[in-house]
Amino acid sequence: MLFTILAAPSMPPLLPLPTSVKWGDGAVQFSANSKVVTTDKSQKAEAAKITELLNLKQTGPATGTIRLVKDAGIKDPEGYRLSVGLDGITIRASAPAGYYYGAQTLKQLLPAAQFSTGAKATDVQLATVEIEDAPRFKWRGLMLDTARHFMQKGEIYRFIDLMAMHKLNSFHWHLTDDQGWRIEIKKYPKLTEIGSKRKETMLGRYSDGKYDGTPHGGFYSQQDIRDVVKYAADRHINVVPEIEMPGHAQAAIAAYPELGNLGTQIEVGTKWGVFENVFNPEEKTVSFLQDVLTEVLDLFPSKFIHIGGDECPKTQWKASPRAQALIKERGLKNEDELQSWFIRRMDKWLEKKGRRLIGWDEILEGGLAPGAAVMSWRGMAGGIEAAKEGHDVVMSPTDFAYFDYYQAPAASEPLAIGGYLPLEKVYSFEPVPASLTPEEAKHILGGQANLWTEYIPSARKAQYMMFPRASAMAEVLWSPKSERNWAGFQVRLPKHLDRLQSAGVNFRKLDAGR
Ligand code: ACM
Image 1 (cartoon, helix red, strand yellow):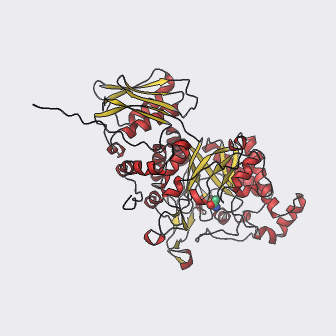
Image 2 (cartoon, rainbow, N blue to C red):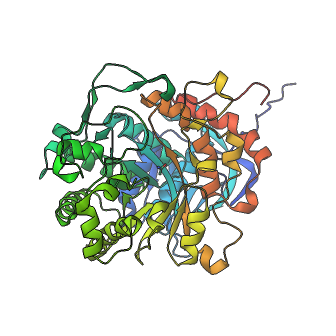
């Protein structure tokens, strides 16, 4: 006698973990030739994206369906319900992002090989399941520094794909710094003609004091920027540009020395660290930067515009008779208030344009403009202070969110800037401090991991520093706090890494014994 034993379809690990997952005991066929079926016009664009995301065939008659059903009862526009049932596959949502995230989850039910480029869908048995899901936080961010090392547009696209796979929705693009100005500004061509190139780069450890003797450069044309913004928007990712001021400005001052305090020609930075060459506080410098931002606003629809504001040494302002005269003229007490004056000017201007300013937590020093939001990086204290004052906050403290730090003991790792941030620590990050009242806690928009690239010269190394820590951060920012569990994450992670492996990501392998 012959018995046919049907293998039970697997229950693949989902990451980030949804709000609720209820596996059934049935199985349904997923067909490579499924058609994404819509009932209303607003779903059309999403249906095309989902067809592509799931590598569906679209030749010959469809042999399965994935239904998109509008459900106004799903309050969060990023929320969805995914049903894999005996009556087929359905994604319910109230807005396009919800359908898209439902499809990202559905893709995780398919074999890991589906994550490779050029993969074609295959027929496969799926376990029945009912999933309800919505994000914990609105701001689920990753920052990439393309100033210290330039990355090609195609590499940025891959990075965005990986964000989308992890349901991260805010790409903070660090575009200007001492060592390079990377965004084309038509009114001031020297910003890129001069400011995007440095003659050489520090080699090895800072303390070695060595240089590579090789010019480094690159910038994004305005068309490149539009392409990236569109590519991200198609994946429900908002791009937040960062234009640094009044510090981290040496590349801009190299291009236009009149923006500095010394009036002398300086060069684009070649070493790492915090430089004393900062913008002068003249009215015409403010106008220059507002001209720059005018072009930036035209390229980036983001409500939030990041103006940096961190690490601005006051040495040159203290020594400059002109800066001192301006402090008096403007009725300010000191250089901290001058920095604050600068930020407030930008804040008012952005507000008039219908946007909002966000900056690193130093913008709190000397008083913060009412509408401004704070990105807390020097621990959580700045974020706590800001939230108590009624400002919106994104938490990205070095201790939990700086992915340029070592993820394992330094001796066994490629050179990094320093610090120590292993995966488990990332996973333990809690963006909402216990010291806030529920009302104050509403100001915590979410969190963000930052990848500064002083010691990261390639996209491959960026991926190594990013993953799997970004997978842990994605779960921190998406999943309910009550569902988060390090042991459970460790069980799910290896199969998730199979997906990253298929996608060709150079992630850091787990330590043996994990
Ligand atoms: C920063 O890391 N300087 C924001």
